[in-house]
Amino acid sequence: MVATSSPTVLKRHVALQLKSLRERAGVKREQVAEHLGCTVGHVRHLETLVSLPKPLETRALLPLYGAPERVDSFLSLVDAAKRGKDWFADFTGRPRWLDLLLGMEVAAATIHGYDALVVRGLFQTPAYARAVILGQEPELDDAEVQQRIELRMARQDILTRRPEPPQVWCVLDESVLYRRAPDRAVLAEQMEHLVKLGELPNVHIQVLPLDLPAGDPAERADTIGLHAGINGTFTVLAFGPELVGDPGVAYTESRISGTYYEDAAEVMRYRDTWSHVQLQALTPEQSRAVLARRVEEITA
Image (tube, rainbow, N blue to C red; front, side, top):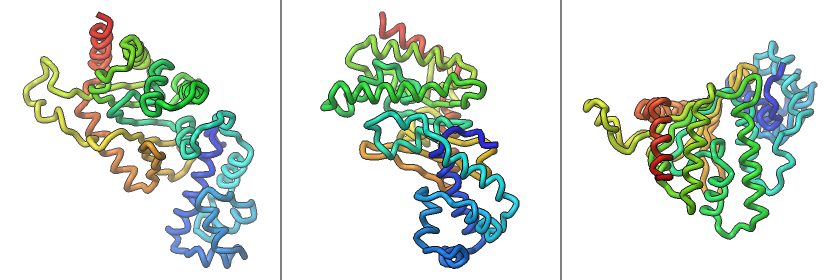
């Protein structure tokens, strides 16, 4: 049974597994092409999300790679990838490099993130999202801004979906709490929203303090300030057991595009970085108190 509802993620998984199994078996693409009676380019396409394998190709490839027992599950994955439709397909104007992230969010079992500059899209209110979007690209017209806001709000459905929403852990740099929107009320509303989100059983928000909080033991002083995530915002996503052997993905974003790290060692480096940052952050309970105090400061 295939649990994920994202064809994009299923296509990615099939491609990654075909490449991984081939390399683990020590088989070259030229050998695969000869075995299938196709071009090397076609083999490359099967491993890079361009094409999905046909049933006969799947039955020929997996025994060649030493995994004949996975033929049936692979056929189910390929079939689901062909038949499904991504939830975001009807949102026009989105950058195509974002599609994989949108698919991964809805398919993820866990999402771990560090936010260094602004509140992440999964947690933004409509007014705060508008301020962030226009802050980045003030030349956008109202229609395009509204499209981006609607897409961002639609992404947030995963936080309260049933029966199994993802477990979302977010470390939020304290500086984000003080980066003012054009209207103070927008920032206050956003902070209030974070407090409410933190009450959900599957959402865990931790504030990474800029300095040693009052009352903290002195021996904690050397753990506050500069930290492992100083290079900036990132997200690490992991998937359920139906995606056998998938190492997950680490994602970063620039003004130009998103970057996806899928090598197991690279993903693990980001996981380790997140763990170090999380250890320096306040607990979720302490963080909710900090966020609530910030609302009071803004609205005083």
